[in-house]
Length: 196
Ligand SMILES: CC(C)(COP(=O)(O)OP(=O)(O)OC[C@H]1O[C@@H](n2cnc3c(N)ncnc32)[C@H](O)[C@@H]1OP(=O)(O)O)[C@@H](O)C(=O)NCCC(=O)NCCS
Image (cartoon, rainbow, N blue to C red; front, side):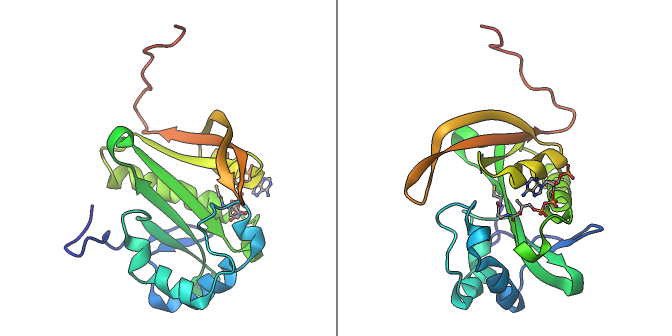
């Protein structure tokens, strides 16, 4: 799903009680930079998440970058006063994994433990089932040590699907991952191969 420029279309606005998910704008760069420039936020994010997180990086991200296929579809997580304090994304996969879409999220530390990302994940999950009719599974690989993200996943109805020892590289070393997933409502997973 992309427009004539090859970029993903702008995401809609999804309103919740604790946050509003909306398209990123150039004016969001300073607040993205402020919240993302934090080793505690980056600690459980993939190595490509810039750290330190400069204003130039935030400006690139809030420009066309976040609408490129590798990341899209990205929502800003807006809290009080329409300040964007984090992001949540759904990235449909290709080829072998074409039925699956990856979900990712982060939030600035000042807003943790207020039910914000738990709600954001519920909003984005419901949206994704409508937006991507061919997608049957939403999932996220999470560092096994990241209990907060696993709490968010469970809160939004995702289940632990498996554990992958030494599967992900972080700061130059291999660490364990857990996979949380959620299948399209009304569809039952195939029973083929079970018990064999
Ligand atoms: C992990 C993170 C997204 C949690 O966001 P949050 O808005 O604070 O989470 P919520 O307040 O919505 O919590 C949802 C659930 O997770 C639990 N939870 C949240 N943080 C937790 C933590 N640090 N330890 C244990 N449980 C936690 C909450 O208690 C809640 O459980 P409940 O539904 O039973 O009440 C946030 O801490 C963050 O952005 N961390 C850095 C980046 C990151 O780890 N991203 C995920 C990469 S996979």
